[in-house]
Length: 216
Ligand code: E4P
Image 1 (cartoon, helix red, strand yellow):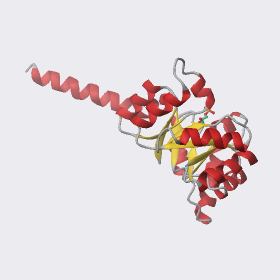
Image 2: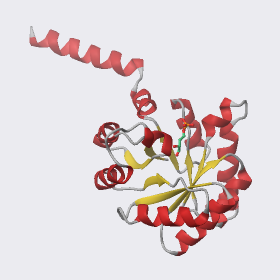
Image 3: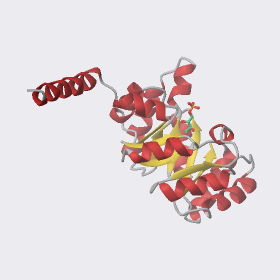
Image 4: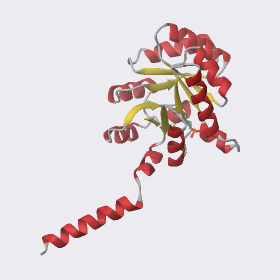
């Protein structure tokens, strides 16, 4: 499974990129709204220049015409920009047209297998099932990832699954086990993934032994 970072914050993106683990970035209007003093397009350009991988920027129009206009403008920013579209009939209309123009798409706010299948058939490059938000309402988000992954294999669908709305490291492990191609997550989850008490203890012991030897 590949790692995308789910943020529009450039410092966080630079940090995750420096670890050598980053394959792409996802943003959404809520994440972009947190970023002050920079335009959405300028921020996407900065990100796309730094990260060599798909960078999702989301449209805010609700009608296909508006989405197409926004989507084409976003795609013109850089060749690695992916147009993020909502899982609605208008969103899929726009998805089909942008796909026919060679523009990559990410259909977002997926909460059922049928939504994922519809998006894939409209030509989506990526689908984003939101597992954390399903867990929040007492459903099992991971079952959704598992079922989409199985159905895409059985039906030979090459749309990639981005496990989204990841809240903790166990989500990452389970999404990978269940066949998600990509996990997109906040930097906090990535930082948590590094941690293991035995790693810290091991480093401490190695350094203590080294210091002991030096003073002999
Ligand atoms: C994915 O593309 C979304 O931006 C994101 O994962 C949503 O996560 P949230 O449910 O934590 O807001």
